Length: 211
Image 1 (cartoon, one colour):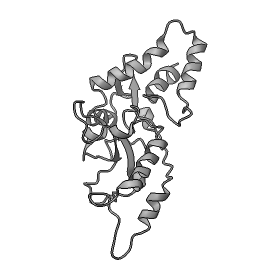
Image 2: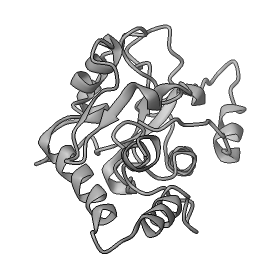
Image 3: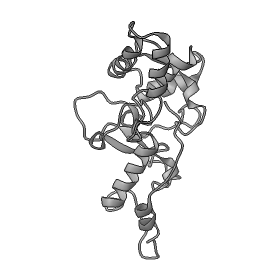
Image 4: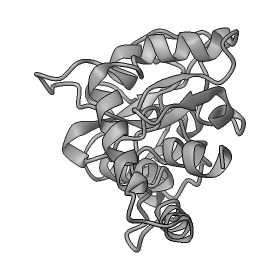
């Protein structure tokens, strides 16, 4: 889970919100936010995350991702249009044939003490990764990291396998130490399209933090 710094840039969304008056109030659900304003909002969330999922760090695609409310809309105290509570998670609500994980798995569950937030600057330190792609709490007694992994299903086979595949190129025996170092540094930077490499914290943990 990579730390996300909110950097709102949504003029269309802001203009739409500013249309609120005594006869009309903006809403997120059915009949509310849609069209260009919703697309701009989602694009902004994806860009600030470097186009990786807010939870598992898979690469995001527009047709297989959704706007995620960290504190769920089912909580009556939550403003569904609060940008600071919005993230972009992988998996489209309607996508079939793949195990549920991340925001789809989390659904309406929320516990401020047990759900680690990618908006927390210390979130990356809560997890450890192994060379075979598995994720675990950095501290075996960390209840929040344990519960977050469980609820978001960050340790399911398909994610473990994808992390493993992301790690493998860095383990090429033909690469010397300096080449691996350059490879890692390049990978951890955004590319020309403002995208981070998949499973950023996995690569950082194994090849930077543990070196």
